[in-house]
Length: 457
Image 1: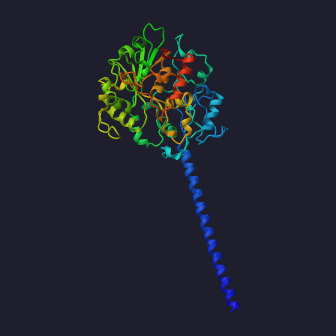
Image 2: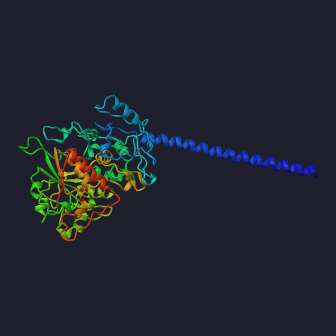
Image 3: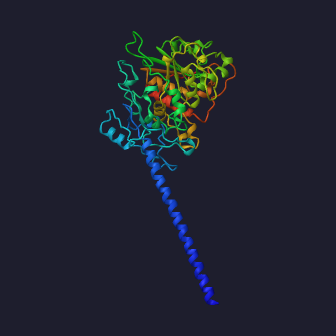
């Protein structure tokens, strides 16, 4: 009997051992297969996002803490931390730049004979805070930079903080001839409007491939100006209500406006001239509804006006496709709308410009880098349309005077200059850092880069 029990126990142990061995072998096989799959997928991914740099794509290595929060490389205790790095041959880029910062660098894609394809879509929801890539501060730059023959030009600034951050020939505009697959893959690492994260290649490129290359610079010196381009940027702030600055504003060579740029009936305070109108699909459509009772009937439509679109999201690319095809919008929130009808009869594709994602990211990174990027709502944050307009002017004009923007006394004034009744206060939306922008305008004013209109009454 004892022998029987012993033999049964031994048999049971042998069976258990065999089962355990099989389980361990199966686990080992599963792990091995996953490792192999990971290696192959990583190899494919790293090949897919190796990029060709367009001439002038460079990295500026100076520090520029004066103009923005430098919090992206600090942990919650203020200690230095390594940024998230996704290596896509950037070591070659960095080495090339260190060797010759002014060189035109071009790194060809090596895909072992494979045709380059879009990388898998990266989603904003995968990141709890703004992801820091090792090519974060690399931007396309156009050559040659604009000539400076104006003695009063901001290009002559000796302010070290500004000149360290400033790239005078940063690529301003996106068009069909400066985008390829490598550029798509690079820009797909950045959320909108700074890149194409969340988007499919074919959806966006349907409109991008329609954008004509600009035939001339956005602005040129006027005859008799001594080579200087003098600009005013006019916001919608209530500080202009009763200012009587209209004549001064219109005396500039060029006037930039954005969003709900209502001028009829308010000319004494804000002028009536518009040379460049900066907008998104949302701002140009919603302004007609929101400000209709204040006299808004269409976007500014001066003869020869230039229209600049901020590609804020997929809805803007849908809008742009319909606009450039002369067709109704085919998808998105503006489906079936006729976009050309919003431009007061002045739409002409030769005078439509689309801001480049590198320019938008450069403005945020070097001048308006908010602490919001370290928050869970990081993907919502971007500078305001007005902020992008000020920096567009800084990069296309020699002198820039700014009106209708927030100052330290903003609580004294209504939200909009066209509010003649009870004033409404400034609304602080979570997607903008208004205080950071206010501080930036003051710093630029104090540094003699711009002249900011401020009231003392």
